[in-house]
Structure formats: C-alpha cells, structure tokens
Image (cartoon, rainbow, N blue to C red; front, side, top):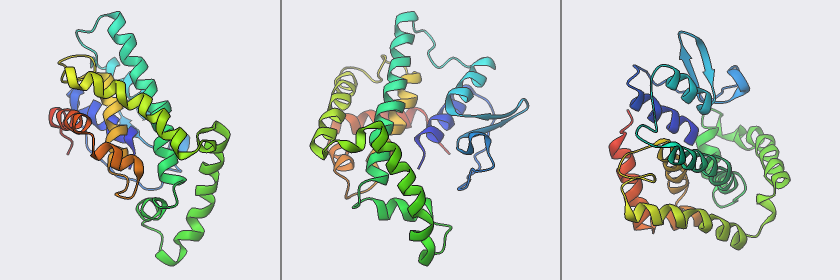
Amino acid sequence: MSPFCIKSAMMLELSGQPWQRSDMLDPTEMPHRKLPVLETPDGRIADSDCIRDWLEGQGADFDADQDSAARAHARAWVRLAEYHLGLHLLQMRWNDDAVWPEVRDQIFQPVPEPMRDEISAPVRREIQAGLHWQGVARFTEAERMHRLEQDLEPIAALASERAFLMGERITSADLSVAPFLISMLHTSDGSVVSKRLRDDKILCAYLSRVFETVPLP
C-alpha cells in the first residue's frame, strides 16, 4: 500500500545491505507514527529520505555516474513523485467514493468488518480535510486529471526514449517515481487514474523494466 515502503525496499536491495521485511499495519509506536522505519545498528531510521541518507552513509550511491546537473534533475523527480503524484494517490484512495471501500478493506483489514466503517471514518475525514486544505480536493476530476497528465506525459516521453528516467541506468528518480505509479496502477480497477495507467503501454513497459531491475522479495 505504501509507495514510500516500496521505495525503501528498492533502495535496500540496490544498497547491497542485508535486510529483512517486516510488515506492520499500525505504526503508531514508530517514530513520526508512520512507515517506513528501518531498524539499524544506529537505531531506528524513520522516513524514506532519512533511510536513503543512512544507506548512502554506508556507501550506497543511487545516482552513480551522474553529474551534478543530473543529480539535481533526479532530486526534482523525487520531489515531483512524492509531493505531487503522492497527493493524487491520496486523493484517489481516500476521496473517491468508488475506490474507498477497496482501500478501507485493505488498510483496516485487521478490524472486524462490522466495525470497519466506524473505525476508519475519522481517519478518512482527517485525510480528506488535509487534502482540502492543500487544495487538490477542491479541483474537479477533470482539473485533477489535467494536472496529473502534466506529470505523466514527460515521464512517458523520457521512458519512450531510454530505459530509465535519467538514462540507461536506474537512479533515485526511478526509485521514487515507479513506486507511486505502480501504487496508482494497482489501487482499484474502478479508478479513472488506475485505468489511465493500465492503458499506457509506455508507462507499463517502464514499470516492468524498473521492477525487473530491482525485484522485491
């Protein structure tokens, strides 16, 4: 469910560090009360960016062979994915009434079904309020899709010319963009956004290349 957890798992795979996955549905006892969290000899590392910093401190380089301009571009792709594609992902999961039941049943699966609506409703309202405050929830669906297209089109343009966003080698840009796209793709068969991505052969081929290059356990 979490593109940030997917990103972190991919970084761990590429780093060469030994690691083991541990799933948790309630992260309230974790730093920042969210996932991912990496257990290390230096303590718990919370947040995928901090996990990246720690792994790079151990010798990993997710933008190897990239010059300073390319590294800057990769960082911009990371931010676009996590702060714009991420908003669209939250919107489609928590604000789309056609999608919400599927998302609710995945996230709140441990909660007995008769209680699921009652337990999930305040969480959903809090996230909806945040999306409204930020602004993405105030747009019409057509306006949101137009904004999303403005992100997807340049990704597809690059993916049609090269294996990965920055060239023939996977970089930090792909490690953020691909997890958000795959999360959108698989959110719901009933989602307009999911269908948009399923119908895009270029982006689907790009995602296949990324996850064939960095297969996850």
